[in-house]
Image (cartoon, rainbow, N blue to C red; front, top):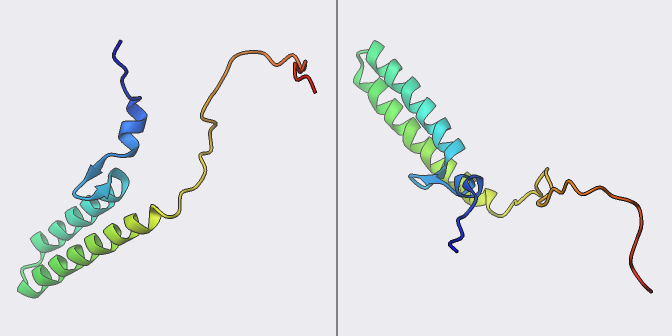
Length: 94
């Protein structure tokens, strides 16, 4: 029988343009904000500054993502959840 990976595990490792989904969302929010600034200001300098800021943000986020791989925190939830009741009886024989 075929075995399939759990969807949430696939979602944790999802990468868009080299960034995890959460950091990609930060990048897209910054990009939309800079596009709004460019639309309402008619300066070539503003366009160049927005471009440089977005490129720097992308580089910083990609480096941060690389550093976060080394800082693996333990999960807040256990890996196995059981509904089996604990009776308090131990079957260990010493």
